[in-house]
Image 1 (cartoon, rainbow, N blue to C red):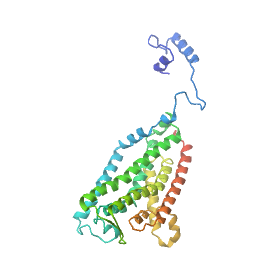
Image 2 (image 1 turned 120 degrees about the vertical axis):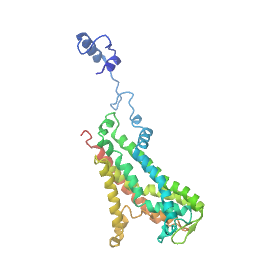
Image 3 (image 1 turned 180 degrees about the vertical axis):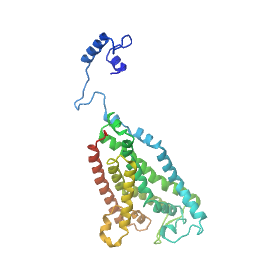
Image 4 (image 1 turned 90 degrees about the horizontal axis):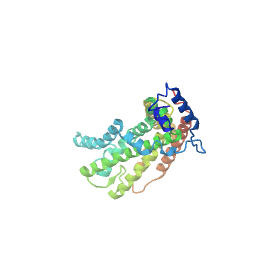
Length: 319
């Protein structure tokens, strides 16, 4: 017991050394015997509130102060300018054959669509994997996880707060990229119609609604990445292993999706409906692919999330 603790229970240590003075030791023992601690029905000390531990704002600010997060968000802001420079100073003047690539400079909505088309297969899943895969594994690698739980922060609350923070950062990243791309596109390409490779064209105001729905779909579709990364981050103490494992599964799924011999089995791959949002750039929207993609992502996300919760509930964090 520290001098501060002895003062709190009524023992004055200013005049006596409790380690050498027998009288002081007797006084300390007597005070300890009479000390009472009020306990709530659930066994916790009066005044303790689990909901006050690891508040969301504190964890979010802590993550935003990390250099890795700042560099990643800065890159997402810079990427649309890099794409614009590539189209402007490229030898083909930004005109290439290949669907959305050929139409990228037709208008601001098309520029946004191309930016999402170029990043939704690898960059965006990697970002979500980074936020979710690093969240708990990094604490374990720093040997700070056991101290967080000793505060005490309940395990389910620690995992939930970490997951919610990662989800907010992922959603912000998914929104930031098309937002900056839209501004760049309006400045350099104007507010024209959004044109699909099939020849359908929708007005600028309708394309903005399609953009919002696209962001919502991408956020739902990437739930499977979040769930898998969360499961891996509670299963290993190596953040790189959790992030890399998630990205590897995403790449493998994309490779298998290209094998036509698998036929209907490809529909069960988590990345099969990655580009279903492109149906929104149409005068007659087909919602079936997006509905199937959303259901697949939610199912995979819930499954991996349940595995993560069960794994973390019994994980040994003392080593």
